[in-house]
Image (spheres, one colour):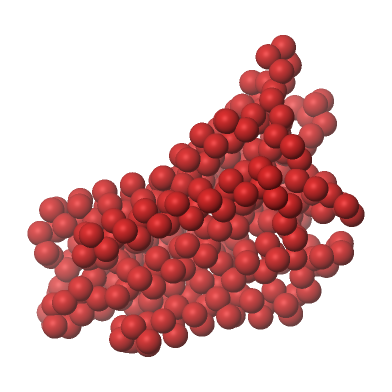
Length: 321
């Protein structure tokens, strides 16, 4: 199973980097990216509610014969959700003063007189593009530019880029925890289950729009091409490193104990719920304010499709509950 996890981790990191590098030279359809982002949100919800959390509960119950560890289940889920909440607040303490909208990647005011940057750390592509002016007619991806050494705002731009990337790296580490923990799951016969494959497919689709949005954001604040690549590498490598590390940690620490495997799955389920419901909110209150924005019914359709996919995969791969 470690070999399979290693292969999935490499594919996940390579895909994240490949998608993130594209905005340096290619322009994308806003509508296409919005739909992909909506499907990614649904995949996270479906993977958390339909696969990871049920598997975590089942594993925790099996580790406690004759007892349903409700406190352990509840505390693990709350811990995962709260962990992401605390990290987000620490990374972007000023990111929650938006008026009515939650900008789930970032809000950067390009006016050089702006005194503070509002930074969040996940991908809501429509709002990102709207704030940066990327949705205007005829827009093309900006050519990478360097921040002049004598620019008085150079350190501010660098700080924005670091905050954005650091938050996404933390998110990537949480995703890796889910992949690593799911690789420890076993079926009733004690054979490794296919849960990790389902989580892997959900993550790889979810990370594509996130990587695209990260690079677009860095370009929008005039970060040099080489620096954009360095930030992208940090983000792309976070999930593979976390996946392998968490697998090795729980394998040695738990020594085959389903108790710790169940806790790891439930904690990762809590992080998934936070990302899908807070960072990439299911509800969209912006409305179709510009050409290319998805209608609410279209957004709901793509989210529901994404939620159903993990359940279908669990049945096809023989991992139904």
